[in-house]
Image (cartoon, rainbow, N blue to C red):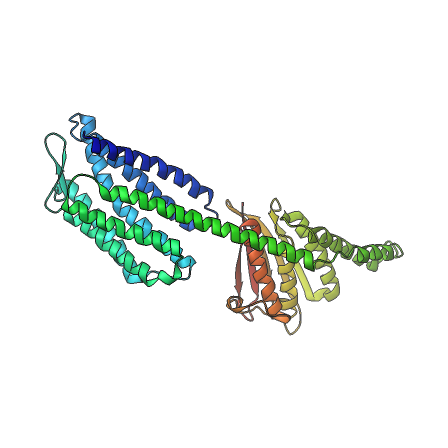
Length: 434
């Protein structure tokens, strides 16, 4: 082999290991954008395997042993075949980033690129049997066939369509993302044109490696931006909590003193006991800036519902179906949902009666809390139109839900699923990953 080929192989091996390291970093940050991280990891896997395959292809070229015969054919096939996978994964990654920023890829462009990837892969498999792309001589050396240019022409066409899609959504992307995407799309086009005209160094594969790593750096930059933003929001949330909290120790102590003068078996004493325990639970969690145990949260909710049932007598029914308490959640999560279910759901009905169901269970990946009511329901699309100017009634309930959604995401990577419609009740599910 020549010195240039040794340098080429060194680049390929470096690209392989660096891509593996990048994948580890992506895995460590996958909770920020699981889908985007998955597609980026697929890009890096494709680049890593392509680099390794091409290094083997160059190293074993001309090796006339049976092992060399197999490695040369398999590695050359994988280099081209993985190129179409890389293109498809990059398409999916761009699609995910655009969706996060409110953009989208034109469906005709999307399906055209997918069609090119499938067509290219099928033609490559056929070429393996008919040799119209490339073949091997008697000394186990790779050489191009007359239709070789089709491989790169398909790739150039797909990348050109991606450039069009990026231009159409350029205002939706951040500056670094635009630069990274345009480089990933344009540089391989120039490299493939070069490879059609000249034979030797695999410029396209080397550039794919550098462009994938640039995409990876851009991804890390966005992750850091997300982390910094969330930390600021969490800090602001803590400040707001401290500013708004009231430490009602005086009220608590006064009620305890009143309780001591009530008969042991009286309803008033029993009701006051539950109210004091409810108040005590709220005092304990007002200064809590981290998640609290599900047991602690549910005890507070249980005391709250006892008082509400006493107030509304037979009008309010409560169903408990607790199958999982070994997890944590932001304070007041279930309490807010239960309060909304009663005040804005059930009490909104003409007869003011209804049922609230509190359910917890776990799956393989998450803990789930469900609060369901058969109240008046509401239009879920209103949540998307809300702003923080509301101050009363149903509008304030929606603001509370929006704040809870934000707290869940920041404090425990949780999410909320809301099913409701006017006149049909409400089901709210909180998903907390394990």
